[in-house]
Image (cartoon, rainbow, N blue to C red):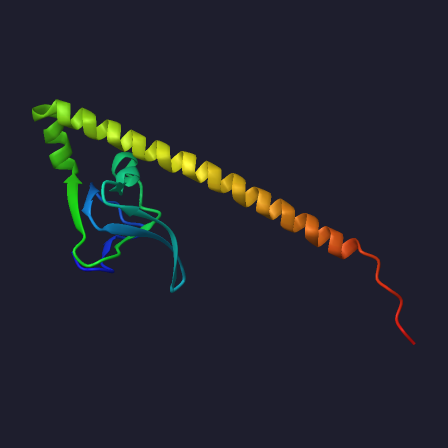
Length: 139
């Protein structure tokens, strides 16, 4: 896969998720015509699994970030067949998905706490600045 290729876009309801074999994927939020990178996933990681399992529209744009990225697409038909024919593989894959989502939730929790502290510090600094007495004008 070529670099900078959109794998899946915001609002898409896909019946696939992807295991990154080589390279990586950047995750973007989009506001108007601007993209904001909010994360990345390297080889060995999964992308698209949340939308696959909850069947809701994607909330992140997935974009390959380097030439030669290799992704294994696991579509619903393949996953359902795997559950019947290769239950051991399907079980291990599902455990991997759970670990991936667990990592995401823990990471977001830590990031949320860091941002909360940063906002609180900024608010304190702003309040201190606004309540500082203003010196009288020099005549």
